[in-house]
Length: 94
Image (cartoon, rainbow, N blue to C red; front, side, top):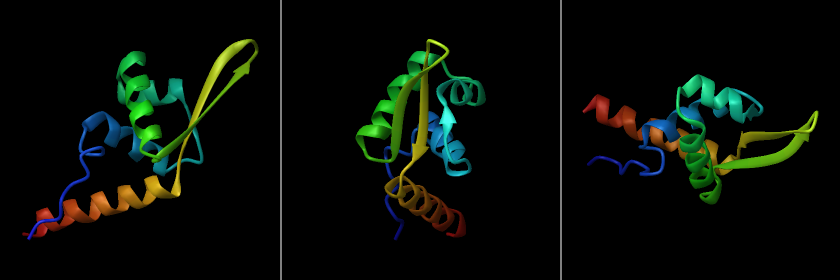
């Protein structure tokens, strides 16, 4: 039997964001937009979905009078990513 894939992570952009955040302590909004090639609006929507699920934390501040948004993955997000990767590996093995 196949494991169910996490529908939140099964979105390409959300999976890209989580994959980037899993390998860094934190990432700025601009970095995520640049690395994924997504629009700022789309990144913003997907970050909100991940934050609402408890997979990431979003910290807003200012740097030189400009807004700064930084994101980091939570333990819940790490576990969700690891479960997703494990499920995908099972699909590949079968």
